[in-house]
Image 1 (tube, helix red, strand yellow):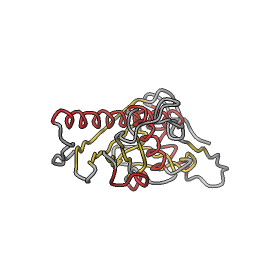
Image 2 (cartoon, helix red, strand yellow; image 1 turned 30 degrees about the vertical axis):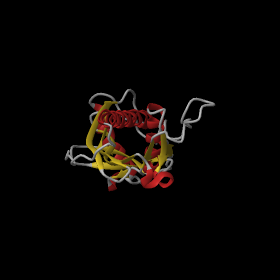
Image 3 (spheres, helix red, strand yellow; image 1 turned 90 degrees about the vertical axis):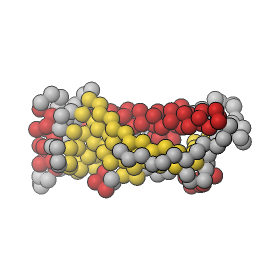
Image 4 (tube, one colour; image 1 turned 180 degrees about the horizontal axis):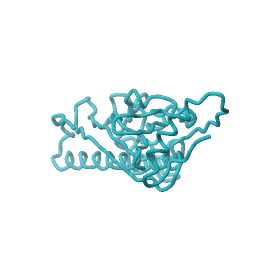
Amino acid sequence: MMMPLLNASGRGAALVALALLAGCAGQSTEFHRYTLPLADQRTAAAEPGVSLPDSAPTVAVSSVRLADYLDGQGVVYQTSDIEVNEAQANLWADSLSAQLTRSLQRTLSDRLKDHRVLGETLSGDRADTGVRITLSRFQGRYDGMAVLAGQYQLRNAGGGLLAQQPFEIERPLEDDGYPALVRTLSQGWENVGEQIADEITRQEQMASSTGLPARSTPATTP
C-alpha cells in the first residue's frame, strides 16, 4: 500500500520509505495508474460552429522527448539531491511522452485559438511553426516540491531555429500523495505550454512588424 507524500519535514523520509517498501516481497501490491488531467480532454480548435480559414497559421507539436530515467511506467520521485526512484505501484496509465504531447497540444489550442495545432505526423515540415521539447526533469522531490525542467525550440517552416529557451518550474504540493503530485506536475506543464504560446505570438508579431517571415536566430544555451 502506498505511503502518502507528507507535507513539511516528513516528506523526505516518506519518499525514502516508498523506495524501500517498493522492494518488499511477499506483500500484495495495489497498483495506481495516473493520467495528466489535461492530456485526454478534447479541445476544439475554434468556437463551436466556426471553422478556421485555410490560411490560418499552423503549429506542429513534435513528440516530447524525455530523459531516459523519466521514460518508464512509474512516476518518478527524487529522494535526495543525487538520487531518484521510479515508483513500482504508482504508474502512468499511458506513455508519459504521449500524455505530455497531447496536453501541450491542448494548451496551445486554448491559447492560440486562431491557429491550427497539429501533430508532427499530420503537418510535417509545412507547419508555420514547429515545437520541439526535451524534458530533463518531471518528478516529485523530497522537500515537497514538484519540479519540471527542460528546453523548447521553435522552428520555422523551413526548419530554421526561431527560438530556443530553457525552462525550470518548481511548485509546492497542495496535498499529500501521488494524485496531488500528478496534478501539480500537470499545472506546471500547462505553464510551460503558456510560455511557448506567448513566444509563438511574440515571434509572429516580430515578423509582422517587419513584413518578413519569422527569421531564424542563433541557438542559445541553458
